[in-house]
Length: 242
Image (cartoon, rainbow, N blue to C red; front, side, top):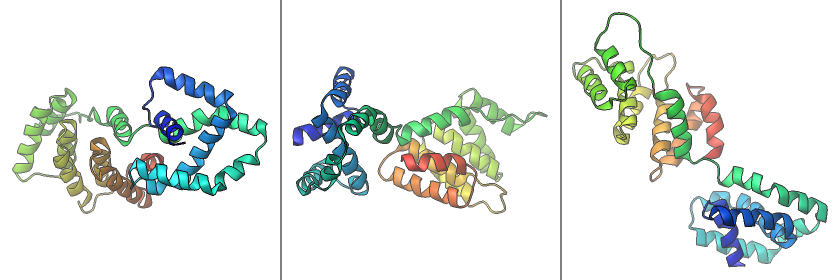
């Protein structure tokens, strides 16, 4: 059984080559016993999802086998008619690819950054240091933009706007600790009508996805949702996928 579980798990964690994925999908549609195993895998993963986050895969295999011996989920499957099993098998690929091989936290962050943070708005009017920094950022000259915004901050003019811009620059130049520091600082600015600091801090952690970053990002996104802060719509979509 362990080999079968390993094979099924490899499919849904993206470890099978494309040719083997095609054979897996065909087997789901044609082999009823295999379809039952995959269906059982779905239910087991659902029941053990919280534990799987904190355990090694070997622990999942052990618990899977214990549940298999208990026969509880399988007894439910046996009550299904062959027609329903066949229909379920045809949907397995869609269901589990969506649940288990959806975009990673890093990919979600990449998509958001690409769509929302690659260009800053340039204010029309007389050119000043801030506008020069924004133009450098928009040209992807992050080193120059960093020098300008840091110079402004060092002169004692570290407004919420400059703090936010510095956070963006550090994010784009992969200085994630510095980016988080700026966005955490931004989140504590008083009297801001709409403060995106927590949301941007979550984005940085999702992008880095190291250590407990994803767990911390999930907690920040929940705060953003609960407080209806800027980014709460995106947070509501993302939080269930992390």
